[in-house]
Image (cartoon, rainbow, N blue to C red):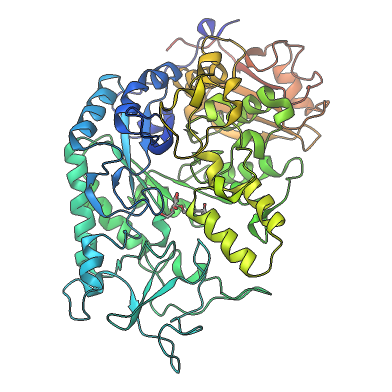
Length: 587
Ligand code: ISL
């Protein structure tokens, strides 16, 4: 039976303020999406040229990684003008044209909001660092050297925190004789959110974009904007020079006050917008505080547990996950936000390795890419597709440090080898975990440079674009792209996918991720083997009695249906629909 023949409970989605529960969001990293002028860097006009790819895929919302004016020290996450477009990407007229094109196709567009920090070239920081008496001095976080030390000498930093991008979080500024805080690169000074003028300036900028017509924001490291007022030292791990300040710079005492203020000052009364917070390190206890509608903060957040499972001594010393670990973590988050709050569902973004390489198996490339997508998209929450994921793009085969571009990877290489780590081991860490794996250009076709640019790409195109590319996958019913398209279609058509409850099913083997979704009489059953060996499911009797005979398979990455209890081949995933009692009613 095809999906068009299945009839489901009607759900009226008109005027729903939580319209985003039925939406799928597509992340564009503009630098690597499509170049239109041959300079090797993706741009806004390039995005306009490729919008039909997104229409074909069926996504509802585009999240655009930063396109603001920026020195590009962190590929645009270092902003020097929040109200202009970087010339590498285009200009405000081109942006308006893009927004109009997106809206004309019935999609929405959300911007990346990076307001934990600015660029050190932002006029606010230029003024702040100019003199201790400068009016904007207090817009950033300045501190004197540690007592008993001379500024600039080793150990004189105001505290021992290590930056996300290696080295200390403090940089000495000779001119005014003080250190400024930067949780990320030296060129990304942290704003001082304690200062009400900073908050008002940020809110005014956000309103300016909303008035221009954008549909919301993805908020970069938004759980880091309130710091512990005394900035205490963090614990130091063995053999490490710096401490971990996470407990003192994340989820600070005023975080939720700021988010509620932002909601009132920026979003209230503006209609169908979307807000999603990036919240690294957020716990299951904290998560509902952000996305409980009654608290009036954000619509949803990105949690990080499942993308940290393979870290050991930091992200660059990864381990392969054991069967079941990924599913257990995702299930725990489903349960944590079952009553209150809402999950963002993702396997990748511009900071993460490619999921088919990391969580799947390139030897079972198509099967593992589609199985992972199936279990992700059919959970409760809003799915995010990162560019190229829908094509099953893989990690880059880089072997030399000069192939990498990311500030995090390059700083890590310098620091780790300086500390005495074996350079080959450091390169293995990058080969598994560098953010550059997500940043190689989108593979549109098999031609030179994958159709991304006519010039020299800013980062190498993955040589496997000759086989893994969009052109080869369109209209191929077995392709990764068509599987993603079908999953997105299911969310739009079946209310049980968007609104149903989630219950994990113990299928007798940790490699199997099976779950049931339920909305009134409607049921959805997902059974997936997240391993490269065949597995026999042992389903609970009660479930078999309920489903056997009445299960209608509506999607599979394998092609055959031998019933819900049949042996699952490597990375096999299948989706059944059913209902309790009376027949489903057409929507
Ligand atoms: O990739 C990471 C470092 O290993 C993450 O911890 C990442 O730094 C964290 O998720 C915050 O990411 C966001 O803010 C950064 C920026 O570099 C990332 O691209 C962005 O997603 C600073 O703005």
